[in-house]
Length: 357
Image (cartoon, rainbow, N blue to C red; front, side):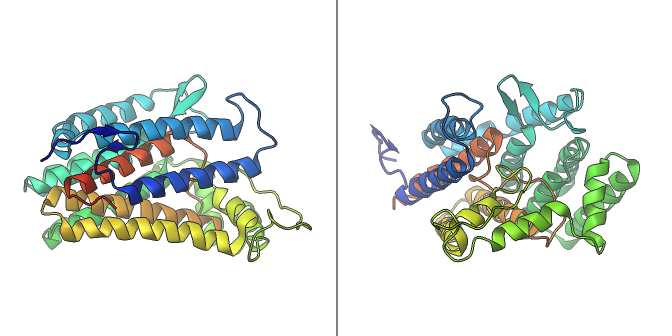
């Protein structure tokens, strides 16, 4: 491989489309939070300032990973999996916040290990499947991770990781008995935790409300907000429709706030950008000769696409509320930095396959 010199955009040969899309998603998030914030104050409590700081950290992570070869990344996957497992276990001994144990309190910021567990799980599965080892230990390792996340409790993240696990093992041409075993374990875990009381009352109420005839208040407000966006959104209207109240509109429900401000055209634009990203990742699956890279890209596409689908489905009432953020749009450092890791690894894979546009 020829030596690459350092440039402002990373090593020579950096895939410009991946970098451009990462930049676009960050700008969309900034502008959305600018609209939602009441002015710009130069302090870390301002949501826009917080997100810009998180974005700058994310860009640093993106470029840092760009300089690390895929082979070097693979050498540290098992260690990263052990570290994230330990962090998830230690997290269960911390003081709960709002009835859950999902974050380490680091002063001005909170660190959420489960966001990084998603990415590390994809890498761990890809590395394990490439080595063609027995699948039973893999299922046990991943089952332990799911249990730790369920005990926080974080049902939404558990569902996302469970779906990613199933998809990646499915595309690995695994024998049907392993898939049946995984499905049975997932269903068993779900009902055990449902009956054990480890899923908190708020999550149970969300599930009960979804299956009842009564509309959930947050979802009803969210649907009203989305429908108010019309074609071009209320941000550009002179006579704006009155904005309805939606809780946590900067995180879980930010897509509803985005739809209100930028309308159907804005929704089409951001979803088209994500489809373009997934299309670019699909090219690697067809071009790369590395099974590891193919498994990683499959896992990343499944992770991000399913999370977007679940987020939109929950705010529109198609699914019970899960508390999952919208990637690179919702306010949150852990989610943004972990997604930057995905973009950085993807960029590196493109570089090593000589795809630069």
